[in-house]
Amino acid sequence: MRSTSDIQTLVNRREKNKSLEAPFYNSAEILDLDIDVIFGKHWIFVAVDPELPEPGDCVTVEVGKASILILRGDDMELRAFHNVCRHRGARLIDERATTIGNIVCRYHGWTYNEDGDLILAEHMGSGFDKSCHGLKTVHVRSVAGLIFICLAENAPADIEDLARTMEPYLAPHDIANCKVAHTAELIEEGNWKLTMENNRECYHCEGNHPQLTVPLSEFGFGFSPDELDERRSGDVKKYLESVEHDHKRWESCGLPSAEEEHLANVTGFRTMRLPLSWEGESHTLDTKVASKKLLGNFTDAKLGGLSFWTHPNSWHHFMSDHIVTFSVLPLSPNRTLVRTTWLVHKDAIENEDYTLDNLTQVWTMTNLQDAMLVRLAQLGSEQRAYEPGPYSTFTEPHVEAFCDWYIKRLQDHFAEDKAGIAAE
Ligand code: 3BY
Ligand code: FES
Ligand code: FE
Image 1 (cartoon, rainbow, N blue to C red):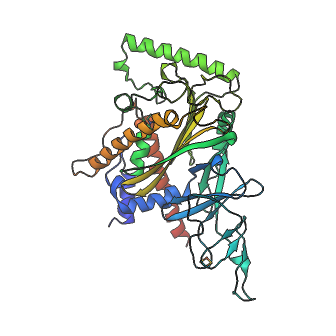
Image 2: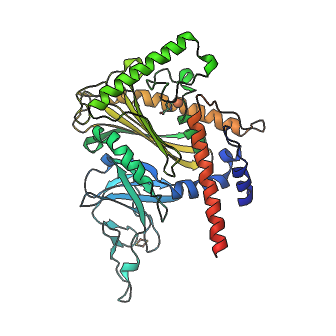
Image 3: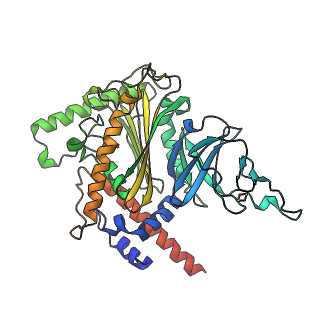
């Protein structure tokens, strides 16, 4: 058993620019803390608007032991509630996705309206106050179609900064007029932080993802100065010129492209649009668009890839023809769910405008390769010989940014706890 003060010691002695100590990847107590503090108090990405296009559409999400239901109301606004009946606590919606009128508990029939108000509870007598037994609400926020929830009573206010910055980047891809073409759930055999760390670098890409058109420059070029011989410097210079040229072209058609980095925010995020490798159009094996029906008002297939990363649990790629989103949720210290969703234009017809195989191949392969790497990292972290190793400041700055953010969040939590105890 690891006590709170043991965990605090581990948090406070974390060395910058090194991987975390083993208990952060293995300990059940730290996973509980992560679920409570990181997933319980921050904005986490869980779904996309096209999963609930119509009034009454509902999806459920499991975050640690909490089950949350997200519902689209008649006014088309989203609501989110704890998926727990206020009578004797039965789970209300047991499916990942469904369509409902009112929310009716199948145990004894207590019935809630779309605002979570209890509107029917038979045999409770005239003294029973229904108004005290509404569903418990959860914060929910759609940012241009990407749905975030926050389980805390007071949700971090800087979601506004994320929304304000990201809406102009995301809006042209018009998620509202997309449909979900495919969803895949993959359980990685590693701690959720290893999944996130792996996502925040491309040091491993060249050796492991031959099919990926994500350009290396997305994570910085990764060369240390002594690796930059004449040829490489020339290549980098040429590439930077092409990025500048593409940025100008995209910005002139209303597509913000410059990098925005707000990784130190409580609701930390980063975005940028870059040309794809091999002058590609999309994340497909032949680098051409997967769907003939382009998103939004796009007429040009070559819009590069807009990537968007959020702390603590998501990343997204937006192309001219499709969108891929990833949501990471911890299941146990060494098991993590990665839910991948592929979106195409709502009018795109399967097998005419796109095939599922071609659409999903690159990220199905990449996810499996990443899952294998995460498993190896997890196995290593469980060895006595494991000790935190150095991150490359050239290729892994965003891994460090993620770990630094994570450690700060735990430090803030302990500081708040202490302040709370002192005030009592
Ligand atoms: O998912 C990503 O965006 C990054 C880029 C390549 C590998 N990695 C998983
Ligand atoms: Fe829901 Fe009884 S537990 S109505
Ligand atoms: Fe990868």
